[in-house]
Length: 369
Ligand code: KG4
Ligand code: ZN
Image 1 (spheres, rainbow, N blue to C red):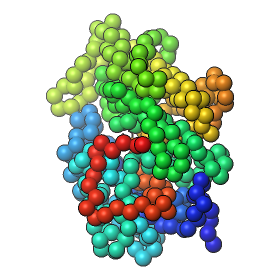
Image 2 (image 1 turned 60 degrees about the horizontal axis):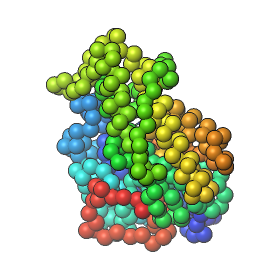
Image 3 (image 1 turned 90 degrees about the vertical axis):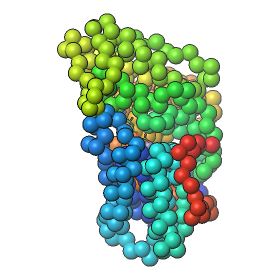
Image 4 (image 1 turned 30 degrees about the vertical axis):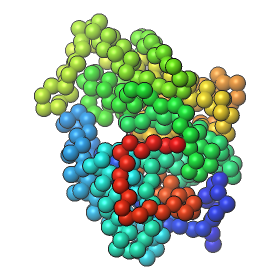
């Protein structure tokens, strides 16, 4: 029996993809059936390793990937109960990401393809975040058989982008950050507030007991309507800290989080920062959805786990715009980096006939569209 799962495509051939992801600080492998069903999803996190440096240390990241990659792939195959004969293709993140991290996953994928004579499919990591919406319950089906055009907001540690998706594999980048990525801004502000790494979840936690209206962070002026800038909000946090005898501008030797004076209202600053960021992201995203007349909005990337952003974006899309837009967020476990989303993207690429050669290079600055 063939299950029609590939929403937006008339091709319903069943596939089983082994997917590999190693673009930053997670070593991940997954086995995905028909671009939708997660047979296994294994992630070896390096968070503890990088916590001592207050951020991702690229050299350490690639070495940790080398140590983990073999066992992670074996585990993904084992958990899925998959034989090598049952695999149709290997999908792997080819970029964007840290070069030394990307090469570990790509070389592992090439070795498997060479040994088993399997097709190799290089996937854009950001495309993976988008395809998390096609997995398991396939929330994308809320937009009908053909969900396009769609607007994607990608908010991660390395990217903040607004992308129009016209069809599978057809992207138009309409906005991006001109300085820090939003996750990066969360991580830097968390460090300034002595909250440690990764900063996004730490700020979200601290903000729960804070007053989001206490500090007004001014909006950056932007030349292009859908571009973002977050470095100004970082500076605004610094000024707020100064009022209270802060800041803690540098990370002390040894990389441990800086100590912070009890006089500093950390919760209020965290809540105000999170509020401002969520508001800017929500307004620009909904404005773009209106201008491009999309069927709906999908959000992806680590920062899409943030509850304040979820609530703000849903509220603005559902009330303040001329048209109501449905906004989809991935399940929390699929917001941060994983290989299941790479497997979903690779399924659609496989059906489109995308094949890469064994001389495929990694593309650390790869763009969407
Ligand atoms: O997508 P991701 O796992 O890796 C990249 O592709 O960059 O995103 C990681 C980023 C980090 O900057 C982290 O601080 C942020 O996502 N993040 C969050 C939350 N969880 C992770 N930011 C805000 N709120 C969260 N709950
Ligand atoms: Zn990511």
